[in-house]
Image (cartoon, helix red, strand yellow):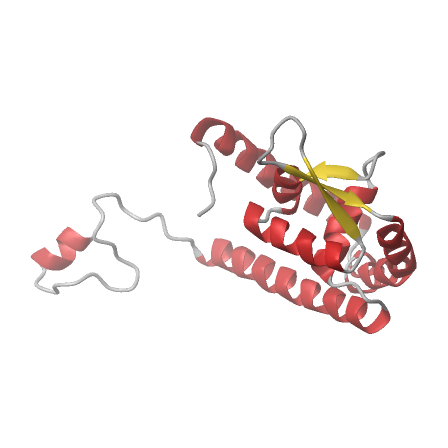
Length: 181
């Protein structure tokens, strides 16, 4: 496209053109609508859930995500890099967030004895109490903002679509390595 723009005397590529030799496979209207709808839904849903948690507990939405991951494990323990992968966060973000949660007594950090560079996040009794207290309100909000506005068929379709996207990303990471920045 860049070559065509230059051949036609237009100079630089327009907003939907590229200087790359590879053509860009732009999204059609339906694809663009689906992509943007997903982004808006995710942002609005996260904001609504974060607001509910802030109003009814001392947990942030990221706190809640970390505590859910840890309390879903029998021993309440996870390597920081495992948390990063499960939460879709950078390792440094998880490490800093876990450190802040540790200051509040929700988790504790333990050094890995095998790999001295690694560390574990371990949920504390205070963390268990905090998520147990926050969970009923959070589940009510999840139902109110998400579950109850969709049909069972829509929820099943959404779950299948999400699983397919996550599986595709996992396969790409296996073949291409880390996909993030």
